[in-house]
Image (cartoon, rainbow, N blue to C red; front, side, top):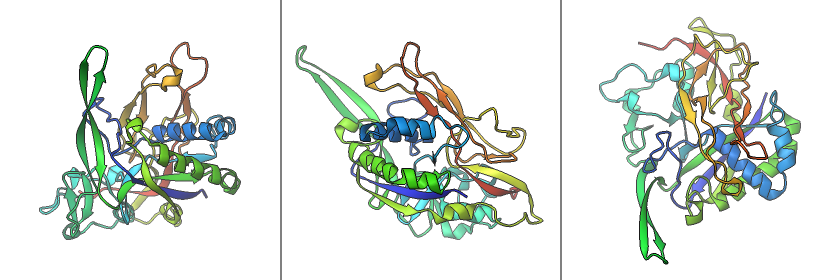
Length: 337
């Protein structure tokens, strides 16, 4: 069974996470796992571990040493996750507009996976962040904002105003991710370097506008993810359960070895693109379709995923888009109508 830890980033300012819409004034609240791999790989290069890191993760498609979830918001003590797609939203309520929530507390997701109903009087949907929150909590964990910047041309005496969307976090809120190791040996080898890389990312920033101080963290904290193993099924299915399935906490690029039954489960697809770094020319990467976080898939074994070389034509080295699956085995329960 995989062992894992959680890294919590307590932001020192706004974060710029590009939205799937491509609109620069939009921002997202989820940093997809392929972007997490990219950021960590950048940090590993700065720390001098790049060749070993590439070999341990991107060139071991059957069993990468480390798998990452996407990065999601948190508000102490709550970790927010995408709800299991087949169980969300719950039956309509006169008090809670369940379908307005895109992220829910981990504890609420665990209750749904156990077949427990969410008491409508205990929860509310925060319209600003689109998170499900305890009813007594009045503040939002974060908000979306648009900030303006001005680039001054001293030669032509002109200026260009640029508006960018960002996420601004409340006190005690931030972004978290899960790092799961393939086995004890992989953890012993890579945990110190990985934590150093995540601390470096906290200092240097994650996402856009890092040169302006965006995406940084005033501190990064680590904690053991005991709940990760508890998510997997340990008992035979009950009478209310049909069979087992896999709940994704990462973006996923299916591999040829993955025997996913695409006629079952519930999922949606992301269109992922982006550019290579400025050192490599900043060229546009080819778009890739990936299965989004929160998907529930049927497969006889855990989906593995794969890394795809998306290097633009003419680039002398590979550029990997990581589509490794980080999935918890769950009992499939028919949603209550």
